[in-house]
Image 1 (cartoon, rainbow, N blue to C red):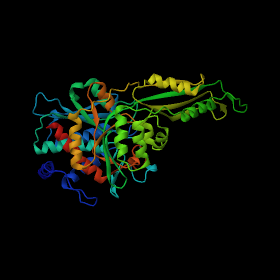
Image 2 (cartoon, rainbow, N blue to C red):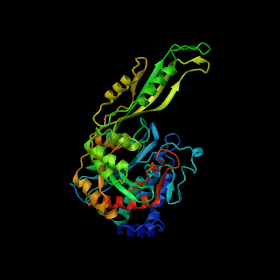
Image 3 (tube, rainbow, N blue to C red):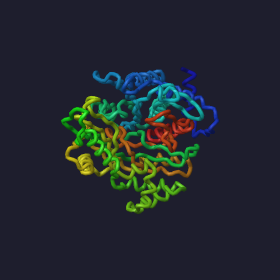
Image 4 (tube, one colour):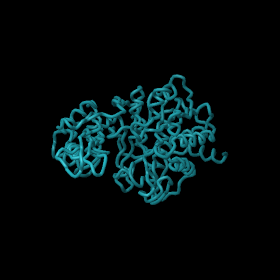
Length: 468
């Protein structure tokens, strides 16, 4: 432990690192790597994993660094014993400055070994990348938060603000127990903060190691699931009739596939398209700038729509994600159903999107029912210079010439639950991803080693800037 303390104390004093792609990791980075590895190799899928175990392992690391039990709160509910989490409180010296909250979900999307090239729950470093489920989404950030508090403790750091950390479960599964939602409802004082730092922002690269942009997430879409269902008396399969529940459902799903919601912008997305587009030296960038000036520019929209992220950032999207139907191989179906997952652009109610789906389908025999959970979108956090300023100052230091660009998430994050109880939540710059999304939620998920190590240094400096 004495050796570890010396390494961590030295790391606290380190400024911005020079990091070549082939540079050997610094000693403090190797210490961090073990935290990251332990998190990735702790299975936290809903089906067979345990967030509670991951939280306990992170609490053990914090305790080993000298953080007392009184500053650590492990939690889980009796009905969801494997979906627990951890809150850590690192006290500040000021009695008036409100705390900041660092959040990260530690649950991950399912991963089948037979589909992956490598075991998804063994972290492998290969070809300049860390591979494993959760390496990108979002155990890298969770590991940074744990590592930050350990470095603070080992250095005897006395921040002005109290720094809190919440590692929680449930962000990846709609309708499952959600740790942030539970804390907001049951332990509000424990996580109370002036603002929170979250996933959702970050950098973009050209796919060849060059960082071309950094963004801060200041808003997100509302999500909603709708069930389409058709019913029919059915009958024997030897005597088919035109009125078939599966065919009727298929026609409804096809109409949704063909429907495109209109393009629109918020102040945040207009700024994102203008500023991010200006950084691109291609036709898409020019089209982004043109759309920011005139959302009715159909030629520009057609170019932008070729990019799945940008297409979705312009509008509400609804997509079929699940299908079921029929009751026997030799019977006409009596029932067929589909789940339609919608990501709703700000300013539209869930009810209005349900009504639009029903209008597009145009068949009263297809019911459209919203499924739980039913959660309205919280307001977007303000672009407060006190929050954005330190982000930009450090981006100037790490990536000279880049500007922190506000962005809106196409999906939703745990910011939904904190924003609803009055804690503005920002997805921060720092680590960067490749144009293909790094396999998040898909196969062979990965994070560039350089992105993790440099992003860790940026995030540490950012927390210190706020805490001081």
